[in-house]
Length: 57
Image 1 (cartoon, rainbow, N blue to C red):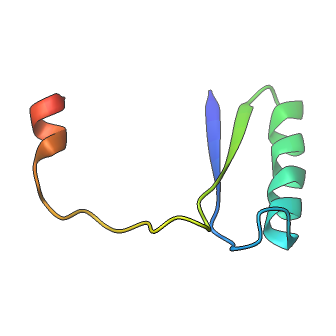
Image 2 (image 1 turned 180 degrees about the vertical axis):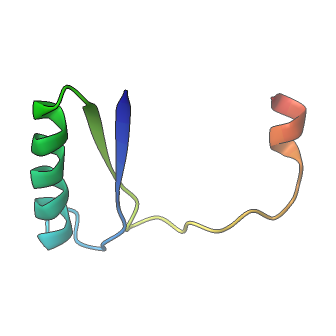
Image 3 (image 1 turned 60 degrees about the horizontal axis):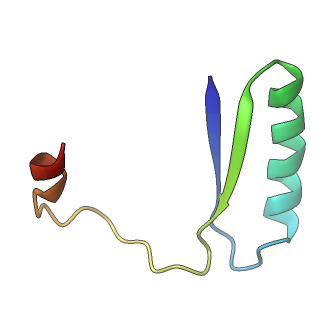
């Protein structure tokens, strides 16, 4: 199993990152692989119903 941890804070290495790092350590001790992704600097938007995911599978 793999857990994706999303950091939405504008500060890449701030308090949210520290909390996610502690969570990642706990999960990894249980044998769960983790990855922290920082998206706080990106313009993330919701689905616009373009159906592209349907075309590409």
